[in-house]
Image (tube, rainbow, N blue to C red):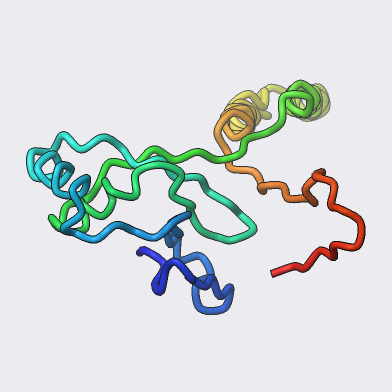
Amino acid sequence: MLVDDHPDGYIDWFVHSSSWEVLPLRPMPDADDSRVKAFRKQAREGTLPPILLWWVSGLDCHLILDGHARLAAAIAESVEPPLLQLHRTVPRDDLAARIDEAVGFYEHELARFAELRAVHGPTVPDGAATASPQLVRCLHGLNTAEQLTWAGPCPAERPSGVASHAR
């Protein structure tokens, strides 16, 4: 699932959409490179250190941050490499507000069920069986769910007269 034609790899959102491909940040080393040869032995023994990937939602793929030679060794040995994935989660300043929203929804649901019980009697459940799993899923998602990655212009100043060209 390595993006073809690197170092000039091309991500096409129509062809590669949701294909979970991996884009190296530099050219992949050859199978006979000295580092790859050293890692091939570890790949065969099952002791290969993990490859560090970063999920970038705007590219809809993973970038290899560390482990180009390890990945080349795993590919050469036809073994599945261990992976360590980084992704963006909910920003800390948003987390408290989103937790408050989730707890507020939970409390609202329990109050709604209590009102229904008051009107229709004890045959109506108390709502905990419905609202509690929703709260757990929401809180778990806040701690683990992937968020969109951000992008913006570089703050570096350019010398006067130098134009910026997007690629």
